[in-house]
Image (cartoon, rainbow, N blue to C red):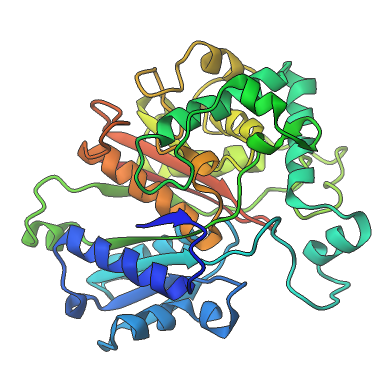
Length: 384
């Protein structure tokens, strides 16, 4: 990885740094890589649109095939799935997956231009709906459905900040108190500034290969990708998803699972793993309240039970099911095409026993989850 922050450099430099670190970690030469998959960044010009080729050129053309993926916040997982599919098909042996971003200051905004058929543009133009406004609606929904409080949301930040103290790649490495969170400015009621993630520069990269080749490289007990889920919603989707302005009709035929629940369910089914087998989770805490939602969406607890687990200390390192031992977005901020890969890196280090200072002891199964715009979602399940 390249540490998260606001470094003021090109996303390419971050991606190359992360790629070289991943290659060194895997003991793989750049010349042995036959596929580069880049996570597209839409805020960095044409080079960002063709990120796979951009990174391959920056590393030095070696004849590898390239691909570029984009799925908003789920970009990294979709890029990983592309590489995994190529390896499983036999068309690639060693793949390098890279996601990197250089972000603007402040809220993420739509690209320039008028697009009256683009919901992501319309939500800003018609309603002034920045991302935190959606996060606040999800938080208020949780308060109404499950009795969550602003103190619960603050406790998520306090926990993740404590985890992030031990993560050298985190941008924010400072302990905070409940009072610090509640005394920070209200951005979108009921969420305060410290409840919401920042936008950051950063990069993550993963080397992926088949089991046989991994053994030839000397990996006797490698971390395995048990599943990659990139499912879409099932009609009717009655929970509002950013950037939409409304839901599907609530009176339509009911579905058994919500969109976010189905993301995790598909991963569990592919991997043949039960939620009770999971040792840790890295989830997309764009806001503190969303972490509580994800705990239930991943079936780590029943609906309405996330607050009780949090209050009991079960979601911290040393608890029954640590959530975001990396510190999460609370400590990293959001670097869109890199974030899902950063989750995979953290789970990999945890399963190897290499997460110094934040290690989940004895971890053998870890799951990630995030959600992008327009029905994109992802979950990666790793085992060892």
